[in-house]
Image (cartoon, rainbow, N blue to C red; front, side):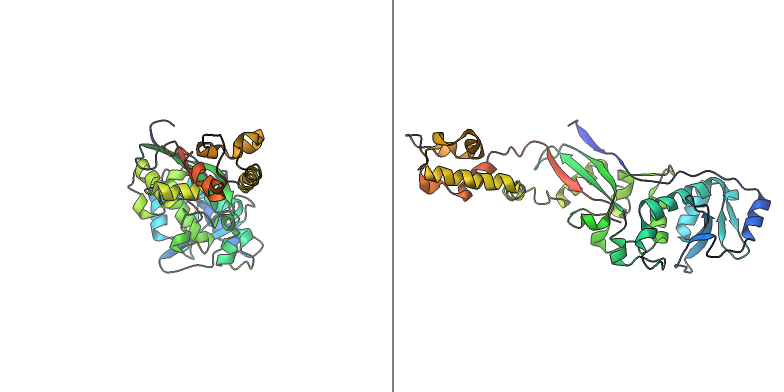
Amino acid sequence: MTTGFSITGTVFSAVPTTVKNRTADELIQESNVKLNKENISFKTANNTSNNSLVTFQDPVNNKNVIVSLDKYTIAKLQDHFDKDDFYTQDNGIIKLNNVAESFVSGWFGDIAYKRDFIKADVNQDGLLAQDEYLNTRNDFHGHGEIDSLENITSGKETVDEKYTLVKDNDSRIISYNRKDKSNPVSIDQELNRTINLDKDFNGEMSLRESYNYKSKNINLTDEEIIKNNAKDSELYEFFDPELFKKLLLAKLEEKSRNMQIEALDKLKQLNGNFDELSFDDQKYLTALKELKDNQGNIPVEKITDIQVKHNIMNQYDFSKNLNFTTTTFSA
């Protein structure tokens, strides 16, 4: 591993869109078109005094989309894009145009279709119940690596697989916000969050950007993020090396453990004569060699599954690079 700390990889990507720069007359003309179920692909079920309705073109089917964006998100968009990209209709709905529309529409397409928010909304009420949210692909798999258990001097994190089912990641210790019990309940909520996380407006959410959904992470360095995630993951007890050994040992493949037990039974039948075991059986019991007596035999009373596990644990070099699994965006 190279020295230092790095967090790399892309979590989600906006759907590619075509920029459509309408004239003022075209905006007015489109605004006068009566919207109905035939020409709307999605209409928000959320609208509060703190939010504003925003409409734009669906990047997948070119129909109309009406979402609810909070005032902070709209202010951020207006600060970044040209003022002519925002046209307020007579009904108060903000119609997006040009590059601003392309940006928001691209992220809507990602959430609605690539992350499966529309598909997961079985009753099509515009809201996501907890069981519906579990069927979205608003998640990813990643892993981290550190160089030490007790004194981390280098580490890295990267993305392994994107757009994974949320319900497949319930066992992950690090999650986007499952522990916070704040899973998004609608496309609107996730769209607001995603737009605000895409700090550089490039239509890509990096792994590092995804961490910023928690305000406490915004000012942290990559080093601090990696160390915190290592502690929160399967290495959360890494200040206790003995406990970590037990956690790691518990992950040994079932087949390997069974082969060890079978080899132990054979060794007992041979009255502890290790050299009479086959090569494969010796391989599974290498850790017992140190128990040989002066005659080359292993006392039968010391041939126990517990003893094998204890000695196998001591074979591991826990100072070498250690991997930990993360799921940081089960949003």
